[in-house]
Amino acid sequence: MHSPQSPLLLRATAPSAIDLNMSVTIIILLSGAAACAVLYTLSKTARAKSCKKARTEPFPPAWEEILNNEFPPYQYLPEYLRTELQDEIQEFLFSKQFEGCDGQEITDEIRVLIAAQACVLLLNRDVRCYPKLRSILVYPSTYVANNDGLFGGGNGNGSVRLGESWNTGVVVLAWDSVKRGAMNFDDGHNVTMHEFAHQLDQEDGNADGAPILPRPAYASWARVLSSEYTRLQRFTRKGRKTVMDRYGATNPAEFFAVATETFFEKPEQMHKKHPELYRELKTFYHLNPIEWQESQTPRIRTGQHA
Ligand SMILES: [Zn+2]
View (tube, rainbow, N blue to C red):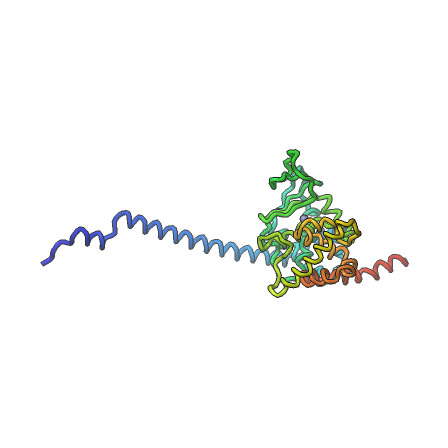
């Protein structure tokens, strides 16, 4: 004989309206999360494909003219690096936003010269194009940055700057300094390379003067750069002449950024006075800028005798 189920058994076997609501909510949330994950993966894949495609586009002759006229290293880079630089510039300009500040108009000259100097730091290395960087803010000239990290406020409490790099995906640059740095590629000062070296340093989340390195390279990097940093601090205190700008003695992050400027712009002097530091940077960047300078010597000699 069929007997009616007790109320307790009914509760155990038939879900209540509240249980059903919760189950539906959980299913919706899980489905939403799965859909987001799929969309994120698809958009990341589509973006990677677009970046790859941007690299294969023909390099605009107008951009090449800008580089030939305003970025001397472009002419004496080895052919294979010049071609790679074009590809990197295409991807950089495809994937990053530029924003003019204080009335600065963004032109191709600005975009190409910033991209070129930034991308020299990526050449010959199997690395992504500044994956954390989203925007480059460009001021016409030096600007005032508030000490709370806001730009251009000019509240009287800020400091005057040529550029800065944030680990939140922003680089700020003063255009007149960018242009001067591109044209004068042998004076050891290059604000664009300086700020983008900071970006490399910040990729692991810490601005500590150590970019992402192969694991076995950290010990040698720490030994050489610590020793050279201490030496620059000592020379700076004593007012002695230095190959690197003394601003590098500020902290380890500034030391790496200034060392990068010197490595690319004064490679012979750095190699002569700081061979171990030159070797560490040469290994990290997979480049030997001394060879570029040597390769331009015959052209200069020809000019002198003409
Ligand atoms: Zn700096």
